Length: 322
Image (cartoon, rainbow, N blue to C red; front, side, top):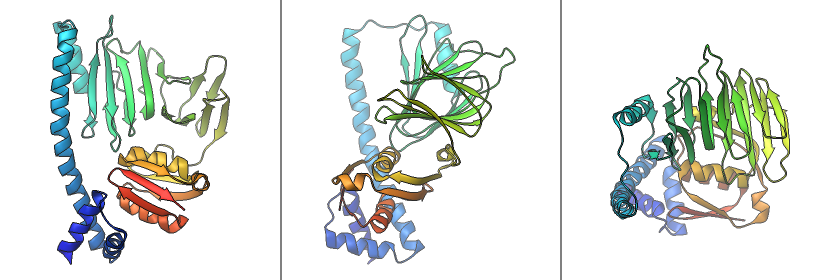
């Protein structure tokens, strides 16, 4: 039975499983904690195998693209000062989740560093001024080689939690998003500014920040959240009670979130593509907690139970229907 269950699990991960086989697999998983642990281990092993293949292909594509670009671009020679700056930036990286990538972008008069965290990963880094940043899945943080104690400016696409180091000089720290700037001196806050989200949100946990949206400016106090509707330009300040940065501890609680919003988060967190085939399902509201110990398949099983919807999976593509 164990060997057969593993074969079914592999077919499930590959998106080749039949409905009867899927039911048999779920019956095995629901027998107890040992079976759930086995299923989780099999999924981890399968992902590692896929990652190994993907890394080999990525390395080849990287080599090929660099070879082609080298013919079209002049060679940039880094001086000793630039090399030291690059080394310092790498040393400043405390911990980075597997497969997150650093890029050095030639952007005279200063070079631009970009840290990208792919779907299904999280990253943590320390900036040259001592400020700490946690990046959620599918996020990018950029700053130039001119970043120092007097010039502290970063660009964010995606979601990041910041613990900004206070400086005696009182120099401000600026997080630039596509909708507004978050201006601080020393504080703890979370910014969510994904390109495909209709809202940009900043939640303040400690200290004070200024939201600068050009024509509109708002001062924030701890426990407040500012939301920008990118379609209308409306800027709204509300109170929040949930732990907005719990994701850095692999904990997330959602209260009355729509299925459409929730599946966007799942897509980033588990690096999958989710298709909702019913408009009514998109507006279904959920109250659910994740602890990031669940596999995507366990989350899907839970969703089927609480919503009564049908879920099918084909590799990275997941389909939800009534």
